[in-house]
Structure formats: structure tokens, C-alpha cells
Length: 94
Image 1 (spheres, rainbow, N blue to C red):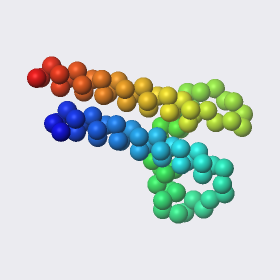
Image 2: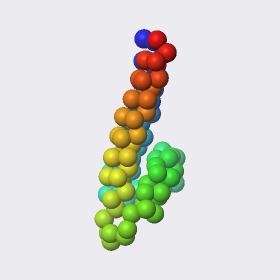
Image 3: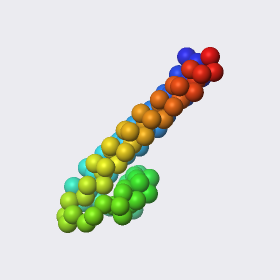
């Protein structure tokens, strides 16, 4: 695999891991958990910057939090754009 392939694989993996962290956070919101657990604390601290930012942009909707859905859409679009940019950048240098 060449540099382009590795770069695209790394970008894709980073986005996928972050999406799965958000999925874990959504699932944990349905369960009463102890927030002093280091793994749970990591999940919350890793996802809060994106989810908090999106919550501030969205109008209040009551008890339903739509920020994970918007985050999924945003991350998928950002991943596609970044991979497209990397693909075109490495294609130009050939």
C-alpha cells in the first residue's frame, strides 16, 4: 500500500472510531453509569467538544437530544470531503 492508501485508511479509521465513541455515548445515556470510571470519562470527554458545539447551534428541543444525529451526518460528510481531497491531492502528484 502506498502513502495515499495509508493516509486514506488512517483518516477513515479516525472518523470511524470517533463515530463509534458517539454511539457508545448514546447507548450509555440509556443506562445509569458511574462517571468516575476512566473509560466512561474518556468517552464523555472525547465526544463532548463536538456534541456540545452542535447542541449550542441547535434550537432547544426539550428532552430529545439531536446532536448525535447531526454529528453523525457532519462527520460522514467531513470524512468524504477529506478522503476526496486526499485522493485528488495524491492523484495530482503522480
